[in-house]
Length: 458
Ligand code: NAD
Ligand code: UDX
Image 1 (cartoon, rainbow, N blue to C red):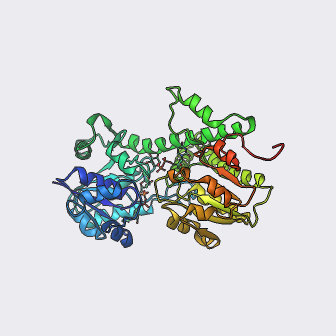
Image 2 (cartoon, protein in one colour):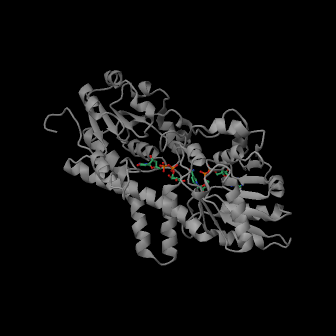
Image 3 (cartoon, helix red, strand yellow):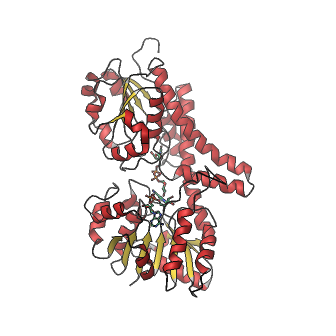
C-alpha cells in the first residue's frame, strides 16, 4: 500500500486521482487544495466541475480510498508519492510576461514539500511545465538539510476536458519520464505500476525527463496547429465558395493526415493550448531560436484572427451595425460537455459584440456561472438565460459558439417565429443543418462555407 497525494484538486488533479483511486483500491489517494470551497465541493454531491462520468467515478472510491482535504502539510508528511497538479498560467508581469509560464505556485509547492517531509518521496510533475523545470524542482527538493532524497518524475496529463474520464480510463498513452539513475528508474517503475493496474503495458511510454516535459508542449502545439491550419483554409473557402467541411473530409481521408481535429471553428479556447504554445514560443526565444518561435506564434495569431473575423462577418451581414440589437449567444463553454469557460472564444466574441453595443444574452447548459466570472465587470451588461428559446426570443441573430448537442436538437422553426426579421444564424461551430435553416427563412452564415441568404443579389 502506498499513500498517494495530489497537490491541486482542479480539472486535472480531481479527475485523475478519482480514476487512480478507482483502479488501485490497495492505495490510499488524497487530493488537497488551498481552495477550501473547492474541497468542500469535492466532498459533496455537487462536484466543482462538470465532466461526464466524473460523479460515478468519484462515488466509486470516495470514503473508501479516495479523500479530499485542505490539510496539505499533514498529507505531505504522510505521502510516499506526490503528484503536483497546481496551475501554471502564463506570466503576466516581469521577464517573459505574456508568454513564459508563471512558476510561482509550482515553486511554493516544492518548498512546502521539503518543509513538511520527514521521509524520502517520489514527486511527480503532473502540471504542464517548460522543459527542464524538473531540474529546478530537483535542486529545490534536494537542497535540504534533513538528509532526504526526492526523485522527480514527469508524468504529463493528456486528458481533454469534456472527455476526461474516458481519456483517463482508455488513454492513447501514458507518458512517464525519469532520470536514468538506479533510483530514477525505481521511481519510474513505481508510477508505471500504478497505471498498469488498468492501462495495457504497451501504452505506457517511458522516456527521459526532458523528452517527457517537451512532449506535452509539443502535443498541444501540434493539436492547436491543426485547428489554426483548417481555420486558415476556412478563410480561403469563404473567398472561393469552397466548403471547408468537404475540404477537411477530402484531406482527412489521407492516412498521413487523418480525420481528427480538423473542425473549422471560431478558434480554439480552453486553459491549455494558448498558454502552452506561448510557453513554447518563450522557450524557443530563450534558446535563440527566433524562427522557431515565430513559427509557433503564428498558430496563436491565426486563432485570434478567427475570432475577430467572425465578429466582423456578423456586423457586415447585419447591415454594418449591431448596436442596440439583441443577439443570442448559444454557448459559453470553450467546448461541449464542460462547464469551463476559461479562455473560451465565446467570451471574447461576447466582449467584442458588447464593444459594438449589441444587447447580449448568453445561454449554455452548464457554463453560465463560469461565463459570468470570466466576463468580470462586463457581465453586468449581459443577460444569462439557461433556456435557449427564451434567449432567442426577440433576437435579431443567434450565434452558435459552443458545439453542445442540445443546440442541434432545438425547434428552429419555433425559434424563427419568435425572432426579429430578417433573422440571422451564425454557426461558429458548423453543427447545424444549414440548408434546413435556410428553408425555414433564416439567413445562415457558417465557418468556411458560402452564406445562404434570402437577400436578392447576395
Ligand atoms: P485548475 O486551476 O483547474 O486547478 C489547479 C488547482 O491547484 C486549483 O484548484 C488551485 O487552487 C490549486 N493550487 C494552486 N496552488 C496550490 C498550492 N500551493 N497548494 C495546493 N493547491 C494549489 O488547473 P488544471 O486545469 O487542473 O491544470 C493544472 C495543470 O495541468 C496545468 O499545468 C495545466 O496546464 C495542466 N493540464 C490541464 C489540462 C486541462 O484539461 N485542464 C489537461 C492537461 C494538463
Ligand atoms: C487539450 C488537449 O486536447 C489535451 O490533450 C490536453 O491535455 C489539454 O488541452 P482541451 O483544451 O481540454 O484539451 O480540449 P480540446 O478537445 O483539445 O479542445 C480545445 C479547443 O479546440 C476547444 O475550444 C475546441 O472547441 C477546439 N477545437 C477542437 C476546434 O476548434 N476544432 C477541432 O477540430 C478540435
